[in-house]
Length: 328
Image (cartoon, rainbow, N blue to C red; front, side, top):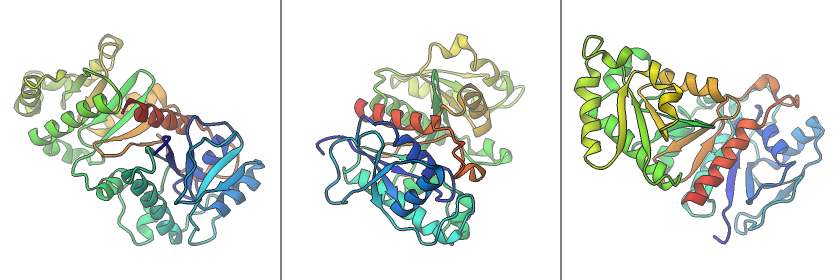
């Protein structure tokens, strides 16, 4: 590949993904960026938004090596399965969404793309379309044959990775096993080095319980599970601090001297990150053999086609993918 190229998937066609792609095309990008979606869909949405974006259809066998000029968007055309109305979900287009993700992911595996950036999908409508789907992360793990992936969100000055993701709280403690904590920590450390160019990452690790268990008075997971794993990994050279109480870990005193935080569950770490940087944060899937970044928000069906969308998160997702590719 003579120049890094990146795939952009607009996600749910009735949502704001197509709008975001068109708005981003108004400014030049430093690398060739190819939207994998329906050209007709983009043309219709551009008319609705009053945007004069040139849609340049590309040949999958001869992808461009130079960035598109401002006001032009490269498009690898994938026809929708059913007509799209902004704001109105249609399960008939579930297959279309999955096809765009498959083309982008396979293109990364084949080396045609240096990474993929994803706009939001609607999990429910894909399931209604007849395909079991729990999210981008799990779909790409299956596509790439990856056993363990790690969700990490990042904004300026803070990265938060998760040991567990979308689990009911009553199931979290049972999922905090030595094997899982070790796998996730190793993946986080490895990808901070290889995908972010951090030579010796320092990682702060949250405890599971209030006050990190308070010496066993508020739970034993720290003593029985987390601390033994951290001690073992430290002997392998990993710089790990913790387990620390989450309510004091997320303070400047600790954060200014770390490269990432490892939280035990979804709502332990992500509320802090989203408070700090919602709309300017990026979702990164670690552990994959490819680079994948995404926005930190949903499909916003009520805003599709209105012109009242903010491209901030998608721009950060693009910039993060570029930086990760450069670091590699």
